[in-house]
Image (tube, rainbow, N blue to C red; front, side, top):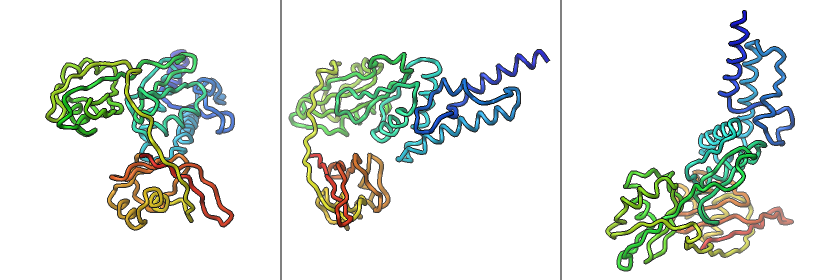
Length: 320
């Protein structure tokens, strides 16, 4: 009997540690606390296995509620992994860092993490316009400053006679065995080469091993983030009035191509919304969405208003 009374609480503690979330005792629209809820489960008899099963079910429920708001369904598994990282950060009071995330995963993860009361999340890509960023996650009392998790490298060479593309620089780095998620943005500088954002632990390795990009001999040196040379994106804004907010309607207006041609581009997999390939012409767009078309550039959906005739007046922001 004594052995059972000692073992059962230990098993219960282990169960709590293994489970990702807990059931809120207040409305869902309030932030979820990893601490308060674990101490507040209304289980009258913790020795009953049915009570433990109930705890598992409601913890899974919180996870499901948070993930239900993820709009980009292809990002769910990555976001789920980041939520588990947040749980560990809160319970252990440690700071964890993701690798570089793609824009859709970054966006969805930050929206979910904002709903957690005990967790602070900081996204960093090295410069203000960075698309690929790392998220640092920690308890709000522990993560009090921005961690140093992004490093910058300057790649130089004689690019006057052989300009290199984004793909050339990316291919040269990946050819050294570095995984894509360890790399952030690549900022092209024309004849001057490029700036590379990377995780700090790979800086020395790349400086020692990267000697060519395409057929151009290069040298690689570390620079401070403040020395990055980048230009704010140039944009052009205009408005259009459309009968719907479908991607084929707004994108054809934004890129000034026929809707039939836009539909063909969608069929060929050349159209992306928030960096995810679109497969349906009727995908509805919202304010803040980014539409990319291969060979055409990018377009951001701005303010949307309804006209008196029931149509939509949409601000379109074209990246030049």
